[in-house]
Image 1 (cartoon, protein in one colour):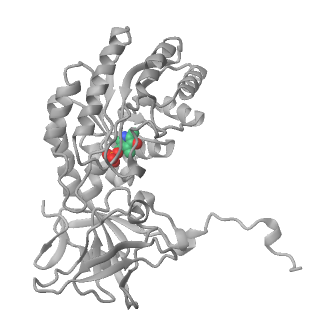
Image 2 (image 1 turned 45 degrees about the vertical axis):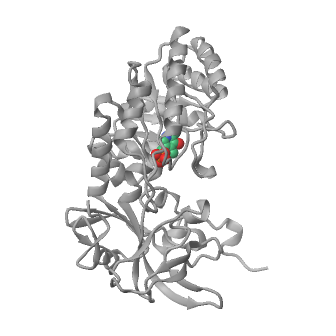
Image 3 (image 1 turned 135 degrees about the horizontal axis):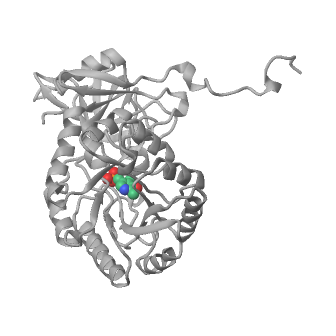
Length: 425
Ligand SMILES: *Cc1c(COP(=O)(O)O)cnc(C)c1O
């Protein structure tokens, strides 16, 4: 694909020199490649095509309208976890009947909004939620189509903060309770509980937890059908990992084969919810070196990007490759540096003792694999404006979210009457 690779010694994507983007929009800035988004989606969709699934892009990975819209144009639905995400998906052109609403804490007003919008299904995660959804639907004179999210108690083998399918996690209901809840739902006229859903975690690089999970789901579906529950949809969740540091990742063809072998012959409509795997390596965070500081023990490269722009290293000890936009000469000497941001937290560190070619103040770097769980987790901590987002396509680029202006940081804050006007005293 040649995305975010050096051409003539300069990092480019989709035929655009990234330094040119940095000059035009400033730094830090997230840059996404249309070719990478589209190719990754098409490759995944092609592998699964024989199973004719609905691919619901997990909007939380990157919820910029232009990113959702890129997938919507290729036929994707959306997996949302809040009414805010639902509104984004609809605004980006995803038809309501391709939207799945997941999450452990859906409020009644969110349920009502989603019912009125006419989404495809709710993924229900508990008995109280099932009862609440029934009431909300009846109140609107509607019937909610739902799937039950089960928790198969399988270790996804991923970082503890992004594992979701073990019994110590808050997500889903255990398999035994699932049986009971399907019985309960039979007496709830506001609910058509006719599917099962699962999602065991994120950044999975090994397929075996997924195949164990899908096999458990297949057993559950057979058992439910044996008890006269109509199971029409199976939602397999997301979780496919990407290479941050040269990891071997799950090939879409292997994923498709495992789906085929486990749940492929059940005659249910299949739904998949990939997030990270579609966007993670389609984006970088551009940043400029502000200072290089030689400490007593370590050398610090201080960037103008920080943990408020990319939280993953601070939150998950995540690795992100960092590369200069100008290709270093082959004989460049590498030396260990800490790559940090300006935020007043020691956790504001992108890399520790990373072997890097020489870097100087003013140099531009790309923090790679920043397409997923990056911009969506951004905050304005330390009153740092939210960074710009740019989408590159076919030799051209568009700003898809301008950099926040300083005045916008507090434009919606209000001084109460006792702090405005009047005398001091
Ligand atoms: C986060 C999430 C996804 C997407 O996970 P990725 O690891 O980004 O693919 C899919 N389904 C549900 C229910 C989620 O919470």
